[in-house]
Amino acid sequence: MAKDRFGRNIHYLRISLTDHCNLRCVYCMPEDMTFRPNPELMQEEEIITLTHLFATLGFDKIRLTGGEPTIRKNVVEIVRGIASTEGIRSVSMTTNGLLLSKLAEPLAQAGLERVNISIDTLDPEKFKRLTRWGKVDEVWDGILAAEAAGLTPVKLNAVIVTGYNESDAVPLAGLTAKYPWQVRFIEMMPFAGATEFQLTQMVTAAQVQKQIEAEFGPLEVVNNGKLDGEARLFRLPNGIGDIGFISSVTVPFCASCTRARLTADGILRMCLLREKEIDLLTPLRAGATLEELRDLILATVWDKPWGHGLSEGTIPLNRVMSEIGG
Ligand code: SAM
Ligand code: SF4
Image (cartoon, rainbow, N blue to C red):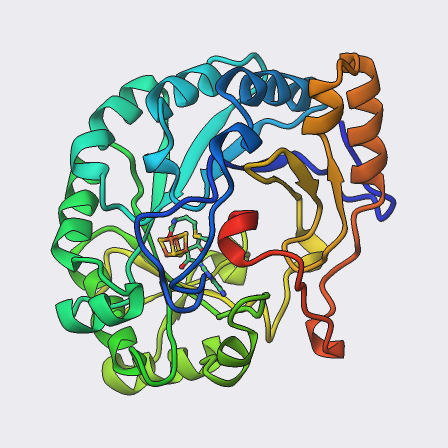
């Protein structure tokens, strides 16, 4: 088991398959984003080698992210390789859903268990503005394809941004009256690239909850308020799905964090919102033994920061969100 110095059992690895993306969401990356050349990204066999190594250290839960993981070449084969690694109990993915109509079924057959799909509004015009060119209908088709392929329970991620989609939390939450989905509202976090925007146009989880309750009445607490991952869950009075609030900025869940992140260029980052990183890919390519890499990972896990420093004004500026993997 990999433990940090605060006694947290770190067993959940988020692997970014690529920093590239087929959208340019305004809160995630600049429009003229430059992506890393492919040779700088972990190659398929390097991803599998590192997954195996993490699994031997007790990591049993993997989430694939990006950038957009579904545009990674051979994504189905990568999922198959990870899902069949001894010790890995669950493989899920966070995706913008655009390619799921085609990929949901093969991904499910390769061993993908669940997906989180990002959709910040149901309005085609607002969706296009938020993503700079995306078509919301394609995401909707992707959601239905994920459900049909058994990638359930489907979870939808929404970031509410002042001036873009403040009035869209209500219709998104309303989906849970009709569908057994979990609609989660994530507070916008500040990174390099769009820091000013992210700080000034963030809508808090409490504000979103207030809007939803003004429309539907008081929400019912689910699971006695126990966190589901990072989300506090609620239900509409007539709901069949759940509504989650991920208040990473205003009410951080750092004390119960069990995560590590592996960026697409093979860097181990122990906190999304702290700049400290350790390169695993360079030593792997230079011929480090698995034992040496194992020691490097264990030392880095041990040093995991207690939590982020947003309340003291510490903002991570060495990467934009898509370069870390949300
Ligand atoms: N491309 C995939 C997607 O959009 O789901 C996976 C990567 S994306 C970086 C992962 C999640 O991070 C998405 O749900 C996205 O909405 C969220 N995200 C991006 N930038 C964010 C920010 N500045 N603050 C909070 N969440 C953000
Ligand atoms: Fe791409 Fe996801 Fe970032 Fe949007 S949030 S730009 S889909 S990586």
